[in-house]
Image (cartoon, rainbow, N blue to C red):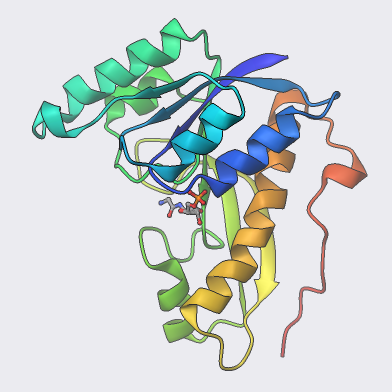
Length: 205
Ligand code: GAR
């Protein structure tokens, strides 16, 4: 089983989905570290209760020195023996130092069907754009934000009258299916049918 690290900033529900996946006997990864840039991230407690090693590398003492903050993160990742990093609601932009150090070995989940709606407030923007199909993407992290090679996507319908919160919840449910499936596929290139995200109809009127 390949040792992975998960980077979070908040709630950690995608981290939870990865924890659950790693608890399955045939899953090809184990979690060597959960790291947060925020000491108050609720996900930290979830990770601790699951018996996982956690670390906080607070960005604030670095006073805007992103490179120094990332060097500290990189050291923690290496110290934990991580071979791959999953960003799971990690809400800081990365510099070329960290993306370069982990090139091909850093995954992110983003709450839209990239390349549509990179960045923040994806559900509000999807509703404002009037799209009928929305979803989430797991991709490799590169220098350009939300632009790396796409490893997997899951789509959901946008319903008439959806609020951003309702749409976010519908997408999040698929994020929790997609992320473990995409990670498994990336590590083994042999995802089985039951770990694939359930494909729904792709035409929504
Ligand atoms: C998720 O919806 C994730 O896709 C998104 O933040 C949420 C984190 O929730 N990530 C981004 O927007 C990255 N730019 P979680 O902490 O419950 O996993």
